[in-house]
Amino acid sequence: MTERIQISSLAREGYRAVVALDSYVGEHVDAPLGDLIKLRASQLNGCTFCVDMHSVDLQGGGYPLRKVFAVSAWRESTWFTERERTALELTEAVTLIHDGGVSDELYDRALAEFGDEALANLILAIGTINIWNRIAIPTHMHPPAL
Image 1 (tube, rainbow, N blue to C red):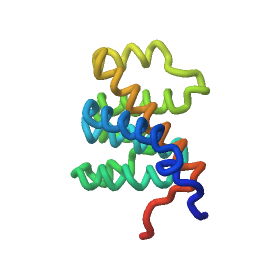
Image 2: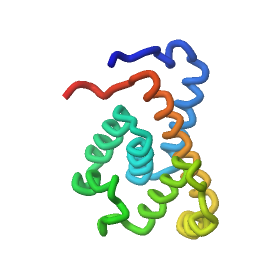
Image 3: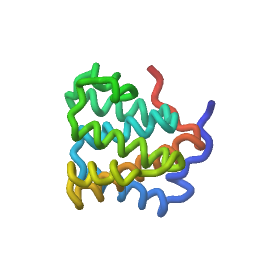
Image 4: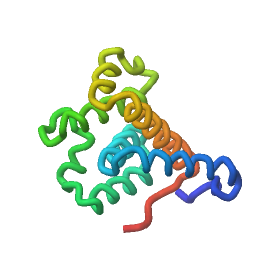
């Protein structure tokens, strides 16, 4: 598949707004947790470009490689902290919002784990990676060759 349009060239102002939102999120959500969120949402959405990018980012940041591999099966793994598990569960609920949304129970657990401001930023982070996935997939963005 060849890449289709270059949104960054054709819709510059809108693209810059998404980049600015991503930059904000990057400053307000810790890197490993932010990259876990990005990886899991990208796996759920089937975005090969973003799965590659965020797997590489996690590995480059010193995150254990076996843990990166386990993100898709995080519920079965004992390697994830309660904070990571809550973030991953919230990521799934928001990304798959059509499957019942975010339950009150999950929201309350996330609020207890993160607090108001951090939860707000976490929700923005999840929304932002879903925007990136919805840009990359229809435009056929692909990772660099191996």
